[in-house]
Image 1 (cartoon, rainbow, N blue to C red):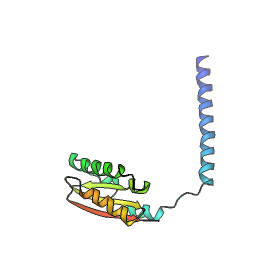
Image 2: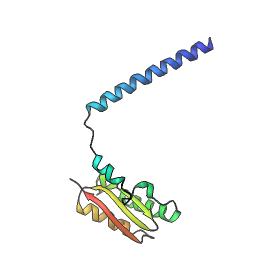
Image 3: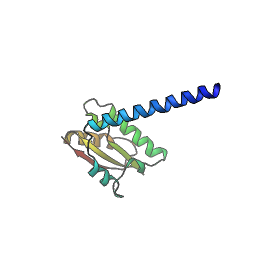
Image 4: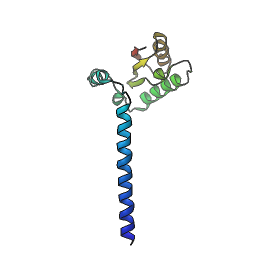
Length: 129
């Protein structure tokens, strides 16, 4: 009896998951998905830093954390600006991602340069409207 109950519950779970999955696919097909294909291909280039290039040493992680806190705490920055990539390797900080204006680009670079331990900032932020 116990085996039959477990079997029935398992089947109900599988059927329920399959139904939710097909509903999710239909919703996502109806919504217009953003096309970041060009950026994604560009980001695979070995010359462009990604989050996987972040150093694991304590000093670099601390620099990245302090820059991120400074950016997040600035209420004048847009959501895009607060989500930029911050990658630190040997004290060299790379900033990547979209921002709303040249002013935001300059503000984030300035915040990065003010953090102790930063040797240089490579500002690759893109202004998008």
